[in-house]
Every structure is written in structure tokens, then in C-alpha cells.
Image 1 (cartoon, rainbow, N blue to C red):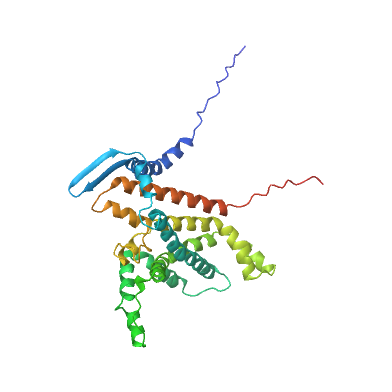
Image 2 (cartoon, one colour):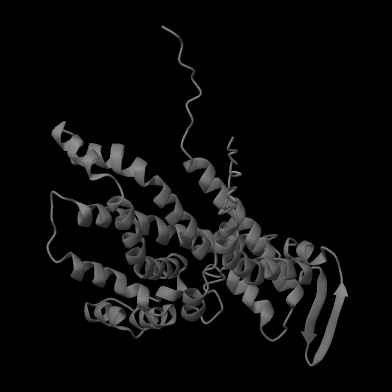
Length: 320
């Protein structure tokens, strides 16, 4: 009688790939902690102290709690206006003046360049040309426009040659704001166009073909297909433009020599913040301004997300 032995089943150790996700996100987490979160917490920590230079004498650091925040929300002028709110308003006004036409113009260009009907020739050349201003330093742009619109610049020379008198563009509130907004528009509309073009090219082309076969007009395709499917990219563009706009500094700083003329109507939040980091090195007040800027950015970003998120249909279908 022969006996047979059964071999024990071989157990294969299961391989878990979940841990690889931690390896991939580790660089981002490390950079975020060292370059964003820790500096943010350090900024808030410094805002709780009195720490500045009085001539050659160092004052502090002395813990003062939220006194620095109370100071920036205390009126300093005789008219009772809060400087921080005025600077916030200046920043938002100039951002809107530049960002709205920037996004609208970039969206139109993106639709034109990606249109299968129009088939624009030389697209590579035009894409390069519209993106080139983004490669030029903001300081160079600011100096260029400062020279063009100065009292002895070519614009005023043309006005004088035609019998007019020189117009002081940088001494008038709306002309100064318009020039600053136009510079920001000119610098960033090319980058926005490229992003929107990438978003449109990611839309399934069969949707456009089906709409064309059904007899949809270009306007209907734009508002019923392109815009709804492009909304995530538009939200991204608006948020990044908002963050960059609230940090507006170099263009108005150079054009107004850091004074925010006329009468502080072009002075931004970052320009005010920079004033505390100059000779006085008032890190407490600078920290308070920085944290206020962070709160404003977060609040406005939340508002944009809230009003652009897709509406959910809560209606329940009934049984037939």
C-alpha cells in the first residue's frame, strides 16, 4: 500500500503598494513644511511681539499679544479711515482692473487658437509672441511704462505737439491705477492663454463635432460646452491670479517710487508691509500685515470656490 504525501500550499506574501504613495508625496510634504507652513507659523509668532529698530537701538522682542493687530485696525488719520482697508481696496481694485480683461481676452484667444473651424496659420509664432511678456521682469516693464507716460515721455510729447498740455499720468488716481493694471494684464495674459488652451485641448473633440452636426452655433458651443467643461481650469486661473494680485508689489513700487502716489491710492498691502521691514525692521507689525494678507487671500479664495462649484441636483427621481 503506497502512501501519498500532499505538499503544503505555498503562501505568497501579498505586496502592498500603498506605502509607495507616501514616498511620492514626501517631497511635497517636506517642501510645504519647510517653505510654507513653518514660515507661516513663524510669521504669526513674530506678530505677537514688539520688535523693531529705533535708530540704532533695538526695541524688543517684547511679547505684546494681539496689540500689533489692534494697531493696524486703529485709524491713524484725521478722517478716521483704516489704512489697512484702504491698501486692501487699492490692491483689489487694481487687480480687478487687470485680471478681468486678462481672463476674458485670454479665453477668447484660447478659443480662437484651438478652433478647428478657423485653423489659424502660424499659431506657434503667435503663441510665442503673446507669452514673451511673461518672460520679461516686472521691474523692466515698470521702468518702460514709467518712461513712456512720464511728463517728458513720448505720450506727452505727442500731446504737446498737437497743441495740448502735458498730462501728469502718475499724479492722477485712475490714470496711475490704469497703467499699473495694464502692465499686469500685459505680463500675464499670455500665461493665462496657454493654460486655457491646454484645458480646451483636453476636452473630448467628439463633443464639438456632435454639436456641429446638430447645428449648434459657435456661441452655443462656447457657453454650453466649452465654458462648463473648462470651469475647473478657469477656477484655477482665477485663484492663482487672485493670489498673485494680492501680492502686487514690484510694479506700483517702482512706478510710484514706493510712495503709492497720488495720496496712497496706488499703495498695496505688500508695499505697506515692506515699509515696516525697511529701516525700522518692525517685524511685529510686518508679521501682523502678513497674517492679515493670508486671511484675506484665504477668504477670497473660499468665496471663489464657493460661487464656482457645480450645483448639485438634489431632486430624487420617482418610480414610474
